[in-house]
Image 1 (spheres, rainbow, N blue to C red):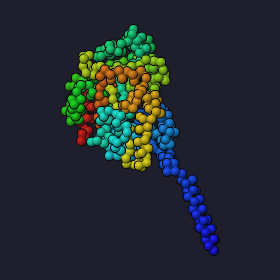
Image 2: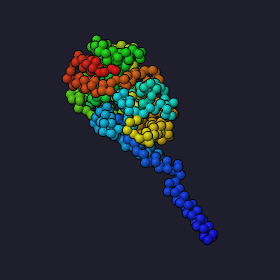
Image 3: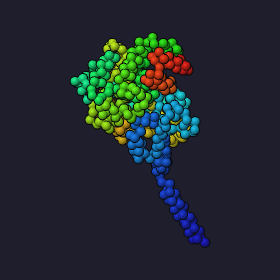
Image 4: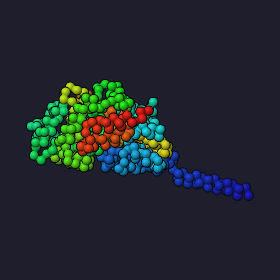
Amino acid sequence: MKKKMIWIVGLLFVLLLVACGDSNDDGGSSDDTEQAASSDVEISILLTKPEITEQFDQVVADFTEETGVKVTVIPLGGQVVLERMTTLYASGNAPTITLANMEIDEFKDSLLDLSEEPWIDTVDEDYYARVNYDGKVLGQPLGVEGFGFIYNKEVLDEATGGFDPQTVKTTDDLKGLFEQIDALDGVDALTVSPMDWSLGAHLTNAMFASQSSDRDERHQFLQDTLNGEITFTENDIFNGWVDTIDIMKEFNKHKRAPLAPSYDDAPLELASGDVGLWFMGNWAYPQIQAVNPDGEFGFLPVPISNDASDFGNSHISVGAPSFWAVDAEQASEEEQEAAKEFLNWLVSSETGKDHYVNTLNLIPVSDNFDMAPEDPLSQDIVNYMDNDNTLEFIVSYYPSDAMNVMGASLEKYLADGIDRADLAEEFEAYWSSVDSE
């Protein structure tokens, strides 16, 4: 009996060991379990820059391959950013990450504080000041961008006998250049893309940012506009800016149907030499390069007067216009961690940094980078930065619907639906209607 009891105890001990071994085989180590959990995470990204959609797909594919985190890219779907975000949040389908700007004001209570993330120490605080709410940083800057008149140097060389960008510093200089280009056989001076975000945000930035070389004075002008204290037709900068728009209208390739062109028409026209200039930013270079990979391109400012020494006449708009924001309302903690992992991966991993510069063609704001885009537009932006010839991205401080409202007014102005006084009146009516609280 004693031997039988010993045998039973021994058998139970062996069975216990086997059970423990099976448990380890099924569950794996704790590290393996965490990796498996990470691989099951799926996040969504609302990409509000449709011009980089194809390139961004390459980025998230490599991120998924390296981390196991699945990514769904959500397009704008024909809506403006604020409308798209509002729709997605209201339906319970908030993106885990959103590329946003002014919209962050509207959603600040629904976004995650990123102030403790590793990337924060690698970025000058000026680049994220726009999204710093009392110490809570609600967005990671996408990168530095710049915009103005992009020119095709080959066309301008032919028109001028050898183009020097330093020769264009006033409204009359710009008109003279347009006339020289227009004299070429089969070439138009300019193409204008009639989108709200280009006209209502980027083109208006030149007017608001050129109001003063002093930041406080520029922002006071914005506040005075909100308070209904600005009469645009009495403002010299506004009038000089509209003078330039009038020249753009006169020499626009599509002046007979100025609202007809799509975004995709313009890079083809510029790169192929059908036009000499296009008002746009460096984000358009991949489309330009696809048509003319060996072409030389650069930027000219949007002049606001005929005095070459006036602030703004030698400057292009440069800044961090967009921010990656992470949802804190509907995303799970695991999804939030994966979202933060993506943002850090993009600016710290070798694959992410390579994509950042060479795939997305972004100018870095993080000092983690020892490389920068080598394309001519990015290089020209760096040149403007090095020479302190840049305008603030004051558009980042616009109300969230400003670009749409002012863009619509400018579209009417391009199409001769309203005159200068009407344009000024519509701007004033919009700004004074905005709740400044």
